[in-house]
Figure 1: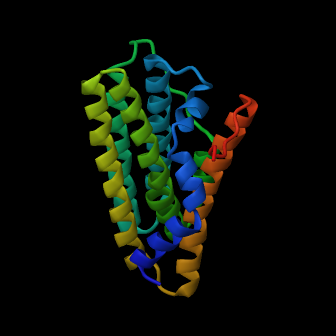
Figure 2: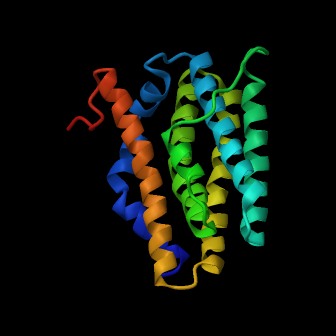
Length: 210
């Protein structure tokens, strides 16, 4: 396996979950059905903050030099993303850390699993979140904020390419590639399960209507 094959396999194996995470129900799940501008921005800010914390923690204890440098770069990007979102929130806004996906990610200890989970699986979910936020602010006729999230989406999408390139360097055998694929897929599954559970609690079916 190589990086291109891994990404294709992950997206194919998790197509249903990714498609549902890319639906308009995603913001319903993330905001507990409070679809107003402040609540959507709060959810986005919390997400960027949690990602920054995850990558900063990895950068502090990662032994592999290339992976550590990559984690430092993503942490800086997520910090910048948070700052740009927070500019649109009240001064007293305090971000909330955590969530099932980041709890799982922070439990990864080897470079291959961290890169696969944090730089492939996670951003495959994040770009779909950004798409729904873009759609929300487009519908609100807030072009400036929609454009902000378009920028964040493209920068997040680039992380996937960086992650797959890094996996080509880090994975030395079939076991490494299998671990990378399994980790990336599990991150998507954790994100989907959280999404589905949130909708179910709201009385909303996470499955699309046919």
